[in-house]
Length: 268
Image (tube, rainbow, N blue to C red; front, side):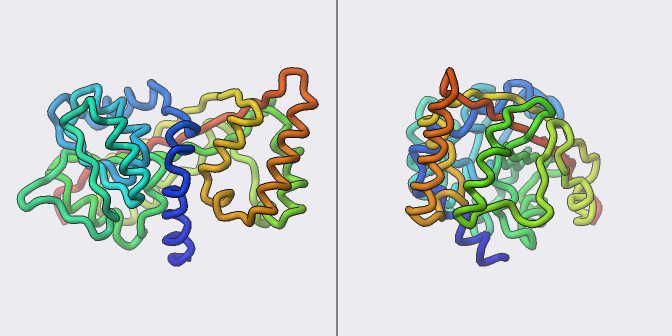
């Protein structure tokens, strides 16, 4: 499992430009709730783990936060540096979080991760975040995933037969998560003994895609990047065919995120 995680988490670098163009921005409400729950304000020092192309970094930088971004993908880091040039208080470091060390005497008011925390070695991530946070600091993370409202677009259930055909079907027992009902990691955080005052907030939003923009999005997911060319050709051809049969040629994809914010415990 660790080997799979290590291999897959580096695949995103092959799709750096697709990632920047196709991955969704996070809702303003999520960013505002993050700032409220952590108490972050202009001038605070933030470490962002796995910044990608800066999807979460930019809206936080507009609030005057001093952000150090750690990104394992060289291509992703390069795109992020370009996007974040208007913010001199933001630094992008090409490194793996597990092996990176802050400058001597440096601590952070918050450690955050947007759609990256699950890629970090679980035996390292919480302890390392605790060590580099200042007393009273916060850990915050979330992921943007596909969710399925009750009256959502049926396209995704219908296309599953093609995933099954190419050997990329859902794992046994996998289901469709509903907005506002995402599994959270409260128990996992509590079990570390390193954090308390854990808060989880859920958000959902919808984006409409045509065939090209949806395929560009799929090309940012590790599973699709790792597919064989014949698998992608079959899948993407069928997506185009099915969407071309719709009057508007579009689909509706619903996104969900569970924002976790936890306070650094002081007594260890």
